[in-house]
Image (cartoon, rainbow over all chains, first blue to last red; front, top):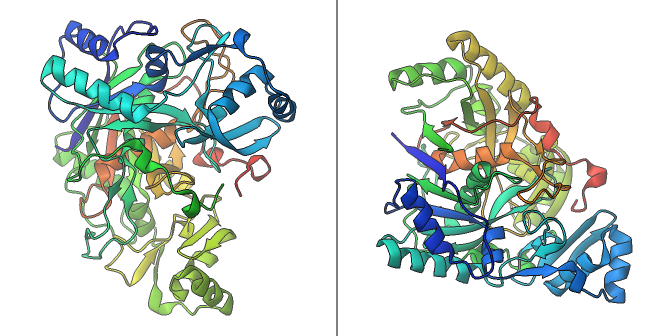
Length: 252
Length: 252
């Protein structure tokens, strides 16, 4: 039977700067009586990666510039938060009342540069995206392999809104050990017709699936194991390969 | 353990106009020794819904207008295909060399109005999106409930590209029996901070997950069962509730 299972790593503790996520994952899996199997994919919430890496800013320490104050007035956000967003962005994509979308320093286009105050410390601090989530994913993968002998695929996910569609979905911002985008051009369909436009972002589908288990509020399930997904016969690549080149993007 | 399983309905036959999908699903599940359980969600590929409903057009029967010919020249597509796309669209959103994005008649913004020739009949015919995929989902749900006594959630998925991100992901275009978007505003995070902006499109995450099992080419797995997803405590709604109102969309 072609089946895939997702389960949460249970009783994951609150994460603090300096914590070793690989060791925490392996410890909590062991306590569950579980161990990683070849082909397993770990999806890890951006928020705990950011916190372990100390990518947290206390809003009380931020002095907004006049540019941030103007953008805060336009968008209806508070100006220290806007300053933090601008400091971690390459450019503003859209700024409207209630809306601030930027290209974050790593190239992700999303609301607020991914900066967010939920599940940080109660509202007075903000978490930024990891400085290099692909590097974070690769490091976690290597450390888990050293601890267990199994090198899982590692995906780091964040919740992004989309044009045209309501609600956020989990998407991939860091990847190690698998190809985020699977180009199926050249494969044939059931009728022998050659597929010309089929390129599937499996990393976003995997991280979206894991988000269903993680939840967004007080579920305390920031790490999910995906087992049984048949990885495509393509080499691994970083999540940055998901980013559509600016000159080939009709919506920026 | 918080776990979710996805499995494909095995040995699903090729679908033809007039076929009863509910009966096919129940029959194939029975042959697998499986039966639906309360809380199960069925994800059904748009392509087989369209084919069962006869939403297929033979390209040889299409006479392109001059508007379709001009758009075909601009985008590099063939003019009969462009005519079929225009006939099933409310408006053109972007037309550039290699790119034609429209608002399909049901309100979905996607490439080619969702019109596609893979897995139709070898390349000479096109499948349109279902005329009303929410109604299709509701009908399949009712018919399965009548046959089995269990009314599963039913989602119809299609593969859509996205601005900013490479590759398609499975998204929901038809929904019955569950809420596609879960508004979590008012819930609290692990630190007691009230979530103000959390609205998750669980339908797109569920259909994206199912797409990983379905595949895009010759896998012949157009129906996937999702078991163990804890549905949110919110009433059902149609997939159309995913559509962002035009006046609140900054990217059209």
